[in-house]
Length: 243
Image (cartoon, rainbow, N blue to C red):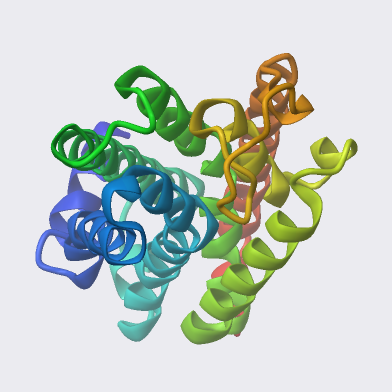
């Protein structure tokens, strides 16, 4: 499996996906500064989890499948490796990129915050970014499977649209645990201390409670395991042949 992961990362080294992993956080940081000045941290984190991160995950996950389909899946068909292992290797490679881009955003935002104005502590920022990493894991195999069925552009559009709509509508509801797309925006509220729309939370707001964070992360991880296993089996049975 390690060899498959290394191979996938090598195949991506000169692609747009790798550039996106590092450029997206910097663009988000610049956007946050232009919109909010000294409150750059709050704005950056808000734009990141609400729009930019879903876009990054969608583009990277869909492109790893689109690249294979462009070559007629020959790089997969002729390998003496089970299809489900290849699928899980691709998923794992994207998991690494998801971790790196969230960590890079935290480092850049923390450094800039020290120069401008620290509105989110380094520890809260790190916890928030790692929570985003954990609660977005399940989307990687989902988007990959969407790309198999409907192609690159449609998969990206559907993923981004569902992410933004459901996180905006459901994240602050009591039943948000039943909507996996709403979980990332909700679990970071106590750490970024803002509503999904970017407005700072009021003192005593129930959204500041951390009691629901662990259950939400557990739900996301269980869903990620289930989706990864199910999609790998579907892929091994020829799920990549659809569009």
